[in-house]
Length: 612
Image (cartoon, rainbow, N blue to C red; front, side):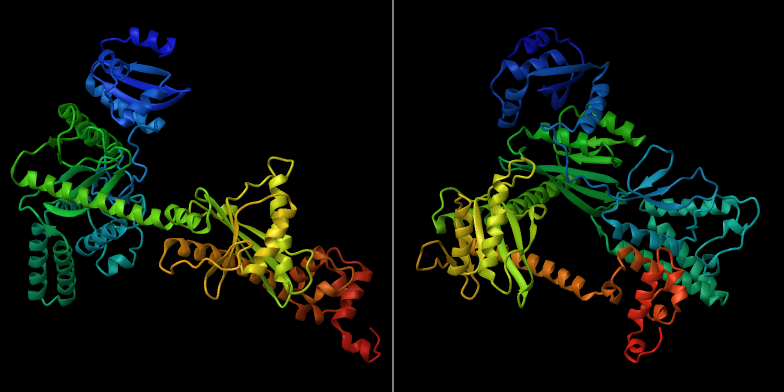
């Protein structure tokens, strides 16, 4: 420990608060403690740390503390500090999602039902979260069929009634803007909307069924059909949700799974006694940390900008009572943080844990496949062609032209087996005439490797670990000659497309990889990407070359005058029908240039000897 640490540790107070661990002035971890003196000292007085904590402690060269009056204040402060500083060693939930909520503000005389991405303390009621925009759109569509709520953004009530929109005519709005309903009538309907969003659909379906039958008895079949359709939509929405409880529960269920390296937390959402979905959150590097600590920090971060459910079921966490108080403050109402030991709620936690374990296994499997296709493939390729160490940066080159015209080349870059598109480059062939791919490749490789020797550091390019040439032995020989001429030697090989053979310099026989190996698939991806990039650039150049205005052939008519003429007349046809005086009137035209344009647009008159 340095002298700064020793001094600060000796002066730690017996008080609740937060501590901010630092490395070279940067905050790398934020924590809270009931007793700062005991907690902070423990980092430096014991070596019995998990790998993550041990790595962090080795970096700490300073720390700050913030004192609080209570443990709840410390927990709240910790949440805010983590959100502000995003320290490296805290759980940050980088894949954090903001699911949509349904928002209703009953303080308005005629409330609207809207979608909100974030829950705010603005006095409105929030319902959700809904898993994805499709789910919330479905819910709102059902609501608007069952309840004629307004969808406009008018600031009601208006000073004078407006004309009702088409929604009123089709029974989708009560038209409060036109004075067709009172505040009490509208608020009563909103109460029904809130009851529905809280999971009480039976009262709504009973009322709709009653209204449908009444309308049918009164021979109002159009209104009866509207109520029937709304009833069917609500029943359909309810049937799409799998019932797991008979009571009106609003719960978040949390559980964690660990594998010694990473961790995965699963959150299940239960609203109105029905499971409406769930989500999993990967926590890299947390697989060997104490489960209670990881889950506690996750809960703190997860609910930093989310509305907690009425009940939260979870595995054991630290300081559950303090966390419960914080969640109540966040919700602005009652929250029960429950660690169930048996029964139905325990079964839900076990279900969440099972999902967490499954998500972790699937993530690991995906990562393994990704590794095999990228870094693993690079290592296999290096072994196949006799390289020492795997090539982290691979560059691929290809030539494209049309019968020798508009010759271009492409350079694509793959880093750790993944395309790095910001590193891609195009080349226009400058010294080669005609369709000579060998000479073109020689020119391009020479230009590329000269960039690695640029005197200006900003202009200097990174040296590749391996170079792929699209072509066989001859193409490879010309490319290698250009590289050696610049005094540089980098591993290089060619890929012959016909049999997918790998040709190495000065080798008479190719290397043939099994067609099912990730190494060959990687090489093919690089070759195909280089080919695509070259073809695309060549096609764009060819397209530009084919778009040629006849005005470009007139001496003295540059880009500015061409733009002025086309802007004034709109087309070549209109220009041809204009008199010379009209052309002269265009801004920027002179007598000579106007005459040149007129003569160019009327060649038939000159050929017949007519006076122009």
